[in-house]
Amino acid sequence: MRNSASLRSVLPLVAAASLLLAGCGGAAPAGSVPAGSAPVGPASAGSAPPSGFPFTVDNCGTKVTFTAPPQRAVTIKSTSTELLLALGLGERMVGTAFADGPVPERWQHDIPVISEQLPAQEPVLALEPDFVYAGWESNFSADGAGEREALAKLGVNTYVSPAACQQPGYRPAPLIFEHIFAGIREMGRIFDAGTAAEQLVAGQRAQLDAIEPHGRELSALWYSSGSDTPFVGGGSGAPQLVMEAAGLTNVAADVDQAWSPLSWEVVAERNPDVIVLVDSSWGSTEKKIGVLEAHPVISQLDAVKEGRYLVVPFAASEAGVRSVETVQSLVEQLAELD
Image (cartoon, rainbow, N blue to C red; front, side, top):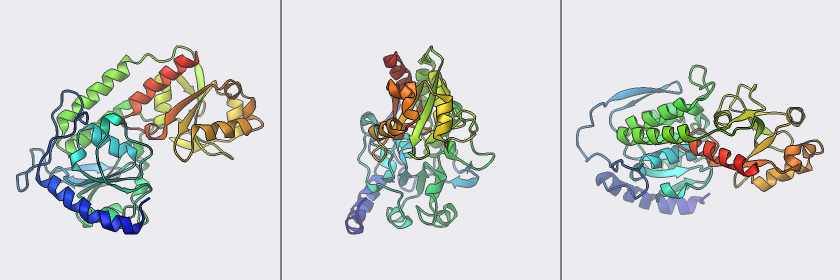
């Protein structure tokens, strides 16, 4: 995380550069827009908003009205950052924070990093955003980027990835790929990038349809974090979605949560055929394997003794624009295990 002194020195430069970007619609960098789509640039200053504006969305129980496409977006978490980049909207992004891992090379774009952790409200507002897009509801808090109602009073619209909504009636249970595709389309509508969104969805749907699930009936544990008690993928979120699409049976499918604690004793009883390890800078694959091999009971499972591990980067483990490629990766890794 940058220290406060360096942040104060960078923010004025960032703000100045961002104002220039907002005033001139430069083309998106090569590779940032799905094949066949046109670059998406900001509207000219003082021009009328595109047709379809204003409109209101009900996002995780918070109603947000858009009178025009956002011009100065801040993203929090990798899912939000990567979706805007996949839509070719890098020029509209003035800052990002709390990344779960590096952005894939095909979406690389020079965007100022506010913080490596959850940013406070002050550095977020210093970038003068008109839109803050978060991967988790908890990113919007008094101790974080600010509460949604308070930001709205300051003229800053907020949005949470719909797959991460937690309130009854908004939480996808279970999550399906159509929820992810609908989220892509809604973001395309918000940024007046509907064509790019439709092309992205069509490409992902075609890729998903072309995947042949693993033929063998194998059970799997999604091991996200934890040592004394593992934090695993439950039966209603992204882990269940991608494992099922890859042809795996989730040993924690009966847990009605996206992620949940599950005792090692239960893991041992369910004896998974393979173990999916979520890799991150703070919880590496090697660290997780060390935990498994050091446990007196879990170390005796065949999956551990034979090293039947599949690896998923943390940034690709949550519901988003990389979920389809995560399914493909699991299928390919299963083929290598065979």
